[in-house]
Image 1 (cartoon, helix red, strand yellow):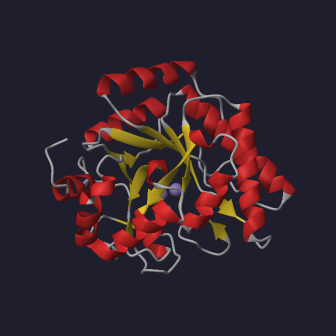
Image 2 (tube, rainbow, N blue to C red):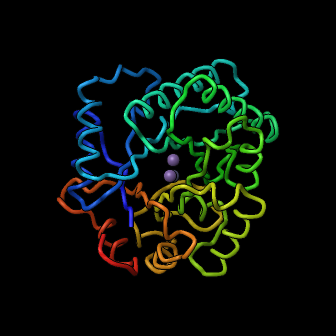
Length: 284
Ligand code: MN
Ligand code: MN
Ligand code: ZN
């Protein structure tokens, strides 16, 4: 099993690797720049080198980058969209530079301009980024909880975006369990997982596009459209829900990435340990 957690890059991106290993992970997710700022300082070449060497030595796989939160390439506003595209390009360039396998980002919100227009803008934005920057890093659309005018809570929307791409072979999907649950997919039950997977395969992008799972419990109830992560077993999905999820056959070869709160006061990570104990297989 490949299991990772989103960890801090304080002190440099190479420091993130040690944080992941320390809590028992063999995969990692990081921000490549400050998630709440449009400005990005240049990556220090020595740090990049040390990151790549460390990642190989420690066998950290995959390396996932999460794009900054401010990005909205679906925005009808010229200024926001321009800044968003610039930021996504910066994150993509950085991801390629550090040898990341995936760059995950949220499709965006149409803010009243309509679903179809929003989807067009997202696809056009992805096309622009990938035409401008070559690299083997996959761009992953993350499904969202569906608050307000957010796009990409439904698998059909993710599919329409991918259908408008010029290089769809460079784009996949990251499925977040908290977002799926909040968007109304009940993955706490076998039948709910059946429905989710059937919809993903039929109306959605298809299971071959599913590259990673974000495993987060949800503070809010099914269909709430609210995005608030809880520790595994402490939210509405619960320990039994995660037992079904992590043992589901279709998910067996997918890397699992936790985005649950960090435990500052301890050396281990109970979420990592719980996921390992729920997974019915050999030790990782
Ligand atoms: Mn996300
Ligand atoms: Mn997520
Ligand atoms: Zn979330």
